[in-house]
Length: 155
Image (cartoon, rainbow, N blue to C red):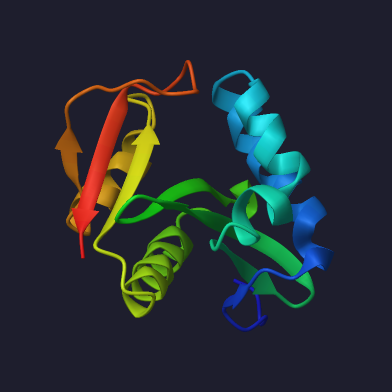
């Protein structure tokens, strides 16, 4: 166990753009294939997430980003996407802390819902989402070949 304080969750700062890309590329390429839709967001987080009115939250320990999630504006709320926790920091409740921060952020913005797309093989993530009240939705078109779970949380 480290003497390091628990990671703090902070809003996006451009100095974390590379960490946002690396954290997401690590989990995506571990389980799936990096897709064009991934490359678009990871290559331009400010243009694709921040500028349209979204946010990227980062879990930062010391000066290092060890987790992240993006909130992209959609009709009626935000899409939760690109949620990642460094493998070295998994199992410590960081995903739950980030998801709670994302929910709080969306509520503070007056959002009516959070939407997400995921994959059946990501059992720990799906369990986390369901434990916080996300419910399954019927299938719908997705820019991601790996998406086979669609969920929503009414805020």
